[in-house]
Structures are given as structure tokens and as C-alpha cells.
Length: 156
Image (cartoon, rainbow, N blue to C red; front, top):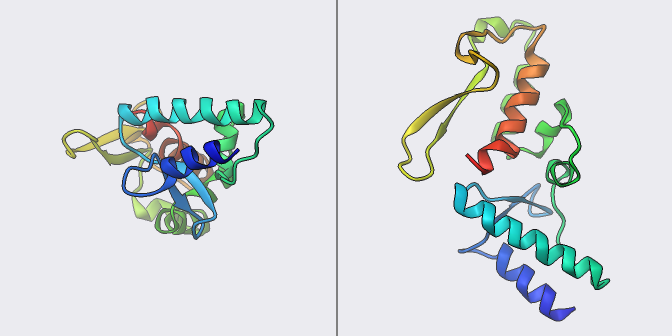
């Protein structure tokens, strides 16, 4: 049991952690590090699975969206609550805004290439750069934006 705990601590402690803390240090989410992190997260998953098979508990708690991803469950609008606080506040403001059209948001996000750090615009839906976020579709935007940040951006 102690061997598993030591390996897990190595994965979550800075500076080489594959997971970052969220929710005031209570839960973990995979760190966005490009394609290199996918292999490390896969290895971590195998270690966690082996630990469970051996009936050893590990004192690490992941956020809800990561568990849903592991279990193959669909995301929903509430998954934005697992975002870092600054992004979570933005998503909440979008949901609360009665005139979101005035913000001129589109179904795309700007992220950074992990290798070059150059900005890259990613469509959340087909031709998303040209699809305006409206009061009718803002929940879908929050859902897709959260899904991208919490899942797809980890491997892109």
C-alpha cells in the first residue's frame, strides 16, 4: 500500500506533476502538457487500476468531469464547475447574462500550442468561428467550452 501511495505522490507533487489541484487543493485534474501527458496519464490510470485490483485505496480525489471521462459518461452544463476559478466565473457570467449576444462570443476558443505557445483558435462546432452565442444556445456553448478545456485540450 505504501508503495502505491509513494508513486501517486510523485505524480501529483510539483514540479513534475501530471495532475494539478483544483477546488482549493481537494481534487485533481490532468495537467495540460500536450501529447506527452497522455502517456503519463495512461500510465497513472494503470497504476490506479492495479492498486484497486490489489484492494489498496489511494488518497487522491479527481474532479467529477475526470471521473465521467474515465467512465465514458457524457458531459453536461454543470461540468463547468470543475474549471479553474477564473474560467468558472466567466462561464457563470455567460449563463447569467440576459443579453449574451452583445458580448459577441462565438463557438470557438483560443488556446495555445503546447510546443510553440502560439495562439490557436479551435472551433467547438463546425464553423464555430462564425456561429454567435445567443441566449438560446449559451448553455451549449458553456458545455462545449468546458468539455474542450477539461477533456480535449489535454490531448490536443
